[in-house]
Length: 629
Image (cartoon, rainbow, N blue to C red; front, side, top):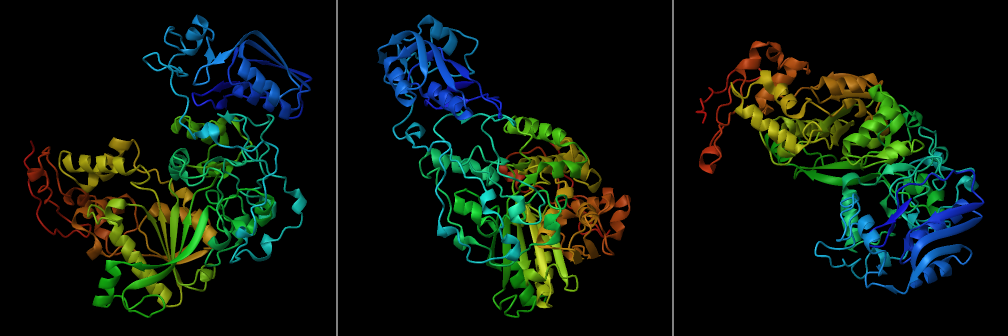
């Protein structure tokens, strides 16, 4: 089934042509043929499928459309009741189907049931809409399906190599020729087992790139694509804006040769365990090395990981130098307070069977939930069970490494690790309602000291704002906490989140350890975290943790005492510093600032001076009574 958009682009909304058998005689039913672009796309699809003879049946066809159809497909037969001589300026039939067309296609004279489903080519005033501005997508050149794409050339030759012998290939002929996106129709969805899709091999957890296969997820090879979703997650929307504004050629492919990693990471044994890493492509940083033969054959394979270097300059590190907590050595930390790091940006690539297994549900249950909760954005979750990879539209993570990354797998070398979930308000702007930035900067200091002792320090920064509930939800929770009866107190800390979001946390740390296995971590000597969920998730995957390090009490902001008290009482690691927070009495004695219902700037901006109590059980200042209005 196909229909045409206002821009004239054919849209294939349904196709279940069997993959292994074609018919001798195929009929194409098209009531009206104007430009013939839609019917031509249907004919092209049937020819590719292998139909021996094709007959087109129509009620009305334009002479120009008939000419284009016979020129493109002189071997087909066309039957039509009538031929119209003219097309309008926007390429519609004149006079067309009249009242019948009005009723069927939502033109002004009719009031069809389909109105509002497929928009009319007429405006509300009854005037014809312009089909498309000059130079739009209808005028873009597209290549024909079945035509091999040209090799992408020496610009992909890797400058650095990190995979060693595992990147070698023994059978180059096993790589099929790539096909480019064609000029036929845009597909709303595809179906497994149908003619057309022939995804590139994907054997998740295979021991080497040749056996595993690349992640093919661009629109350049729609039939050979083996993943649902798009690269760059939510940023793919900005790519679409760049394409539609003609700032970016949609056929452009990146030059990967000089983008290769600045440090060697992998391969490690857990890369070949299909259950150990299910949310990251472990070869995502070494595309031009591990999948060089695919690139040379013309495939558009994109990295999902980039590894580079940086100098990091934090005010806290400069202050630590000034007061003597840190000492510059010129190798890890400069006298100016800059620390030297290797860092890796990682985009998620989900292996759906493995993710489902982590949550103890079936793959089909997971697919249905993802489809429903994304408001049907990804129909292939339901129609393409043969595609096991999903590139979700979520943020990824960044890994910061102090010291030598190649020492990480060596259990005899000290390793300090913090797994940190994004908190824009605190991490970037210094909001004092939580411990996020203080704990993060404390972890960085610990990583620097570890690297100076000859070990390695790692901070993993996940894009999971507001416990993965989002920043809007987080701010709504803040307001509820500050305005609730009895004030912002530790006993209601988690309840407020549940009241707003229906759940207290959606970070699901069960997926978090994947990045540690990608780094080759098997033993963490110092884990800079109080979270029981993070600790338990890591240990459950076989990684050993020797010591857990809590945030120093003097680093906890006044308004964050509520958070730390509530978390310790709920089971977070307390260490010796926060033992008193395990006492239930502390839940009601530790309070944060309060807000009234005032919205006027002069009153609201001065509110919130009533923080009282600490997680250590010592009151810092009395609570201020706020008059509620």
